[in-house]
Length: 151
Image (cartoon, rainbow, N blue to C red; front, side, top):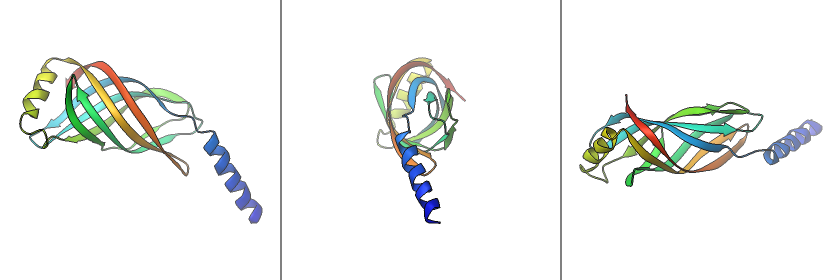
């Protein structure tokens, strides 16, 4: 029993040292799901590379969102995503942001950006990823120019 515990702890520490950081290579899309005077919900397509030999589950996140030069606010991750091992593909994250601090002026601002069809999107913050018993905070800072869609 003692040997089994030792092997488990050794495996755990070895897997910690073998954890390679995920990389965000591209923001592919931004689709407006819902918008009202209090909040906005978006689906953001982000290309993520997982160089690890194990899947990683993204469980939480907090991102500052900027459309063009306009600060939209802090967005929270609403869904959990599983990133397969040894993969590089686009994953859709559903994020929700509180617009009440921006007031009613936020709706025309976002509507104007949506009508422009193309804008730069900046995501700055973090997501939390979990693999086996290890949880890591993964920093994201990325700006890309994308086409904006509405679903």
